[in-house]
Image (cartoon, rainbow, N blue to C red; front, side):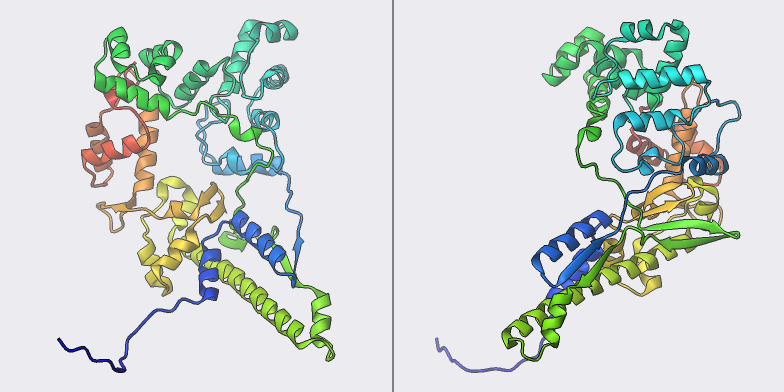
Length: 449
């Protein structure tokens, strides 16, 4: 065997990713809050950069919100109070530094109740402990000196608020409240919660099956549903630094046309420290110092370019979403259309990975509430019309249909499939079952009262 040593020239293609490109891609995929943290970090590491934080604390304009709710929420004419399934989510509009008690009272303000009930509701809210539990009901009733009928009615109002589970006297009642807010009324399931949470924790499945005369499959379904509930619904309000979602763009209707606005009010302004500018302009300054400053200036410039690229890409994607989903912005969630990132990438002539990074953690404030960009991307099913229908709108139909069904004769997946077929939506029963399970809704056999 002969080994030769020598030089050989050849051509090959390689993708070289520069540090600047890595930074740009990283910033593009950041949420607004992550971007703020990154800028602060860069400012600490780079003495050239000065960061000016604008005041981001804004209060909610409740009069404007209520007026907005009248025009954009579909309410039953017989419904006398706020609907917890409203498209506009209170989670998205709470103001900074808000505690549990203020949050609950702001929701109560949206109920159509008289002054007496309002005072009772606020007293009950003030009597909750930090976990949202109402520990001593007898003392509250005694202090209020009111009829138990009024008290129980007001307590139900409290228990319908977000976070779901608030207003119970203990963990078990809190979990049952969450079930009822999901329109799940199952006496057997509630008995298991009241009496046998310890057995679930200790995985005593056979004991539960024997006690309640149910098979293992039914027992596991119950346990899965219980575990999907939140044992600490008020936990987030105990945090000292609560993180809130900041919309990246806002869609408004002006003169009959939808207009997209970038939310720059909370931006961080980046400046170059004037001290270092003077050093650069001074001919007598040390050459090494000048080179260091120039290098830091290049880093600062690349950071600014990356931020501007993020902003322009976000606006570009948001505009495309607005153009493709006009029915949603006009009429609501039922009218959202199927849309894929690949289609948008081809339309905008950019890579699909750029779309994926561009929608990551980005939020849009719409007439129907706050939505993540990713929400608008979904698969479609065939219809008798020329356009498909989004899986999101189908899930909404399934959820609303089951919510309004006759609880003594719950609808099977097959019946829901037929209802969708009659509307021109070509869907299989197994797909209905899949969507129902994703919505964490029990099958018809377990929804029957």
